[in-house]
Amino acid sequence: MTVTRAGQVVHAYLNALAERDFDRARTYLADAGFRYRSPVSAIDGADAYMQDISRVWPILEGIERRKTFISGNEVCDILNIKTRMSDLRITPLVHWATVESGKIITVEVFYDAREYAAMFAS
Image (tube, rainbow, N blue to C red):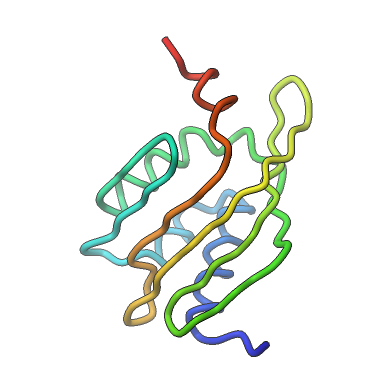
């Protein structure tokens, strides 16, 4: 499989997140019209999304890319997200992004959010 420009953009973004370089990660997101959806949140706007992710991302230990599927401007990665609180946890996650004009315009993630939701339940 040939990695397309869309694949390069998404993987550069994921690499920046893995390195906790939120300023660099933000450069890969569209300035207007960006949308993020997950089992626990829906965020419109790249700046709001980066603010949210930088708040919860300190528990990240690493991102393992298991498989990438690319169709035109859509990039779907199957990932293992490694997080640490009291112990190391590995969460399988599907990350589906759409790239337009060299920027990520949408990100939708799919994962089992039961443990995550329990952590933040009031």
